[in-house]
Image 1 (cartoon, rainbow, N blue to C red):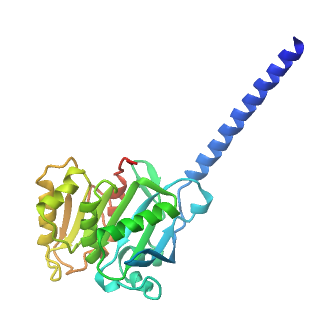
Image 2: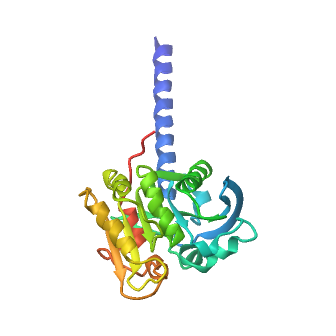
Image 3: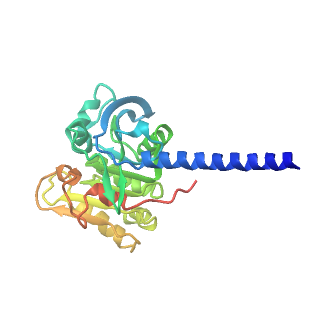
Length: 279
């Protein structure tokens, strides 16, 4: 009887020790994962045949990515027609504008605080060989989620000019995959019914344009936003129209210091939104 009692007590002690060690491990992991980023992300070139239109991309992972186990929001940023190329020797063309330029200059914030939570992006900047389709963007997202620790409830797409148009097109074709989109002077002219896909999915949109844009008329953005809102979505599409700046609305829109929506920049605005993952 004493032997059985002693054995039972040993089992109980072992169980308590195991649970205690597990709690300590989980606590240590949570602590490491919740340390805010302070160092800027380092942008590196990746050569990969992601799709027939994508031969390479720039990736920027949070500085502490390899020290954590958590998943991160994903920002896919789409370039303009002047930056098209082969994805390898032409890739540096992306560095002249917007998000890839900010990352290259180490001025893209290491982290953003939204509703009391710190977030840091995985940023992917693909280079297209010519005018892309929504399926090319989706292939890039598939690649990113397969190769990096992406929080699939927080995937965002933004882009400028050609890339802004593809951002509209992606939102129409895959409205339930992303949490928000930001088209900047986007070159896309969808029908009202097509834009209804965005409205029905309650996909948040914040679009930017300059009133004096002589390349892609401002009415493109105005019409797209108004058509979405005519469906009375739960999240009304937003637009910011600046008086001047010509075709370059992206420098101001992607600047983290530009706060045009309830004191939020475009990145903080996006991070307000997440989307339930449906497998």
